[in-house]
Length: 358
Image 1 (tube, rainbow, N blue to C red):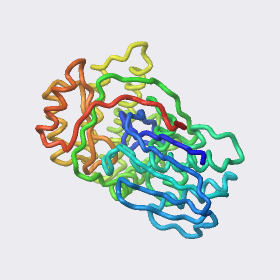
Image 2 (cartoon, one colour):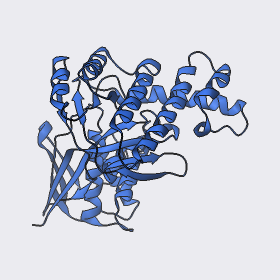
Image 3 (cartoon, one colour):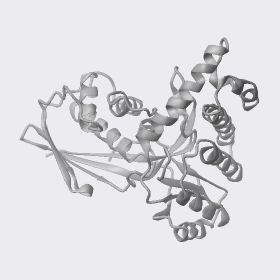
Image 4 (cartoon, one colour):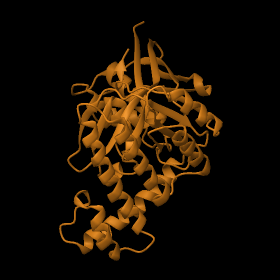
């Protein structure tokens, strides 16, 4: 039987954590850990999904319509979404999904799975428009976020589908651009503490959105994307002390992301400059949004003390992973320091391409 093999990578947010759901830009990269989906036709009129990494399996009849959804059932929500684009399962497949992306670590293991699953469905059963990485990303976003009324944005799905280093403008006129295909010195370190995605995202998004709404009602023609850190000193008077940090974080992180974009667009990337901006971004995440935990703080300190240009928490926070940017030939020293600080695992990673058929 013909076999289909789909690869979808995880993602690392370099700049713009907790920005995409506010309509502000992010810079992220796909990295070389991935979901590998292998599918082979069967004669049973079922989608038999095997998940050997967690010793689980799922059987979905191709006639299933999923009128109601169970929480976080992305296999079902993706099927609902692709049908709206003319993609209808018409024959059975036995599908194996294997992954070396760390789970609950802030590097989008779940989004990579949804991207791979959507890519498979479109490849196996076709749809009513050309299958492009952007289409895969959009449908994965709809399946993971819109269908489940989740608080996230589009960064995860688009980074996994498009690949490389991308700048994503999440404003109403959604756009993205590739700003690099490689970046030396990236190290990922897992804390071993599961990150707190949905609850933490919902809390931060609600407070940031509330602050932005209050300012918008007070200031005619207010645009968050045009607001500077200097403007905050005036605008904070409209906000309670509770809401001020969320508004400040949005403005400051946007400014940092724009400075990083300038660096990435230079002919030669200045690693030290990028590292400094990574540190600035992390300080906002740690001291203003307060999304770190002591173990993450210890890992950040260890990486910087070992010579890293910069280091930051990755993902929604409350645990998860950090990314560090190493000078040449310092990777092993930084990795050892991270492990000694209590990291569950630490290793070099490379920027990679997006979802593709192998």
